[in-house]
Length: 290
Image (cartoon, rainbow, N blue to C red; front, side, top):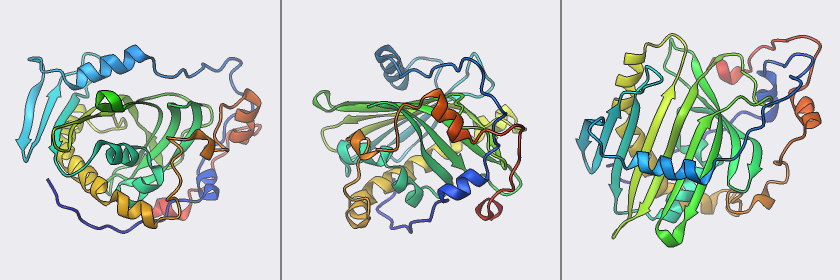
């Protein structure tokens, strides 16, 4: 795996730029919006079991440098599930945890990230978030609207973060992106004798015109590189955080630090959507054209 490599922070879109690329909603929201509920304990339990599953349906696709990648055919989609296990002896679970939650820091280390922010806080350990990823030239960029939940079990020596895509009225489709879908994606970090044991799982469909077999091939090839980048991000985090203006900002540990993020009423959702009498398309901001 990689050694510590410095990187440059990138400026993210402003709120005005985010608003400028929204596809504004129609005049009225549906009479009854489906409520998005937090993940249940049993869902976390099942997800943890899946990430550590060693059944015969998992086919090994990569095994090198303390990292192993498996893939498994899905029953419900042409996109395979991909599972990764890696050992890192030079990082701790607490720092790994903070890296997985720090949206601002992700903008510094994830060069594929076009945008990302919290849409709505469901409770102390669940939220709805937006993430946009830049794709290679010739392909439309993708974005996600995901429900995200987490469990910190420090005394038991592990923590877990997982997400699944949802439809949220305050997270409409944006012009210039294809709305992708995460069936389930997440991380499990376990304390080891030295460092951590890391697990990653994803079953995610970029949608659009990309064939399923291409998605499966790219995902298994990209997974080791993604883990390498994440490992490097963990190594850099403490130094970055100490020198950033957000050095005391840990909203995933203290929700009081996010005064603007709360459970929204239907009236607040309508205001967030800037409701109009008809659907309006506004030109994308400059950063989307780069």
